[in-house]
Image (tube, rainbow, N blue to C red; front, top):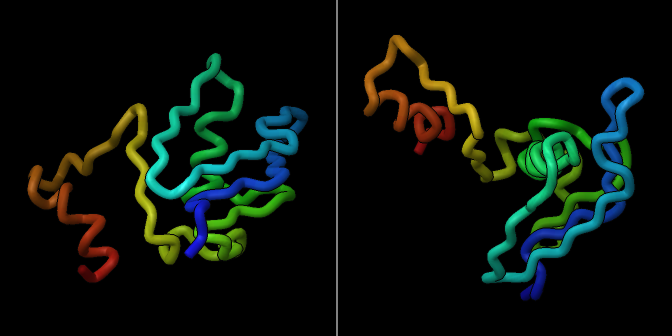
Amino acid sequence: MSSKSLTLRNISKRFGNVNALDNFNLEVGVGELVALLGPSGCGKTTALRVVAGLEHQDSGTVLVADQNISDVPAHKRNMGMVFQAYSLFPNLTVEENVAFGLQMRKV
């Protein structure tokens, strides 16, 4: 079993002329709790979106338990993300909003 649960290796992501991530590296061990801290616009959210598969990196590798998931689509990564500015479906009840993700995964 791997001692690393998440590895980001040389991740780069650009948005036009802006380097959001430039050869970003991160290793998170099994059972480790990590916080990404930094000023607005430094790439924290972009890094998390790359891990979740919501953004595709321009270069670099995303590994989970030493398995390369760089090209695995978001819906097959078995990950979730809580957004800073959350959005609920206004036409759904609280229960329906909570159940939405599970229903999409057929759980």
